[in-house]
Length: 124
Image (cartoon, rainbow, N blue to C red):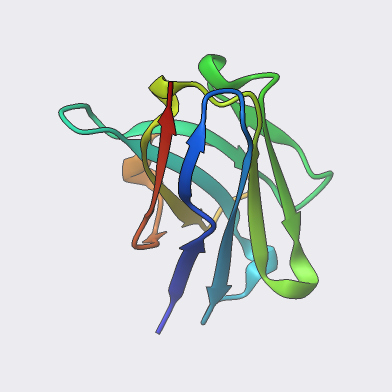
């Protein structure tokens, strides 16, 4: 019954922006940290960033620091990924994931629930 549903993906030109949303249901939102991952064709799943309940604090992979921002609206049970200054190498399927912990972890094997993914394509 736990569901994470991503939306907001699409096709953008290099230098453009997108905001992805992840709507959660069937879980107590305050108990979970939320992470974003991405996977490009032929590549392994890659950690993008995560956000905690308290603070909140955020944690990003080096390749997106300064360009991506994760935020969280607990009243709406929704987490967002704002992506600016997009590059062709950002092209991937982006996944939202939830982990029942206050600690921010990059290892995808530690996440309990996953969304279906949303495609982001950045053209040059």
